[in-house]
Image (cartoon, rainbow, N blue to C red; front, side, top):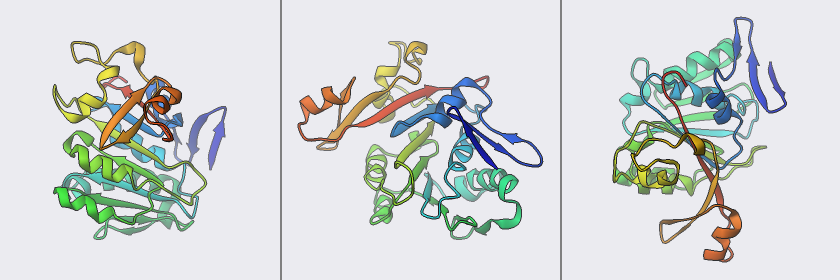
Length: 241
């Protein structure tokens, strides 16, 4: 049974309650921004949190979720993200899930699906052409290229009862990395996250494959008249969240 109360997300099963375990996890789960990056080192529960987030939509027959990793073994290997999703979602759906591990697909009783795909080479991004993606989770997004992420972002559209969204998890990417450049506003000069900006939104649009930023949608529209800015935020995590 899914309960939503005052913005809180909780799944109650016979075994336990599934829900965010910290303030930052709660920020991620309840965020309505178009793009959310959840970053931190190993052990901060990023993949599990992504699996929890998708549970909000799997009762919608038109929901089409997408999970992307750079390499196939990172999807289907022992303890990898496909297994993380299955183990968590079985606690809600028990044996009612239909698993197509070879194809990288989980089908739900409602008819919704979550597909797991790799994007190893630059040309692999074109395999998403024509896709309708309700929600995309790019797990360890720093391993992908900027052009891969921008292309997948362009595929966000849905007939499900939700606003299309992209979620990214990441480890620190290092100076000069495209993702570090995207997150620059949320970082201190040292490169560490600025605690005061955690979860604060900014807005952007794409022009010639470049991100045009503003603190408000109006600021972006002044730079690119007629555009439709997307909201973006960064939530930094650590092992203790």
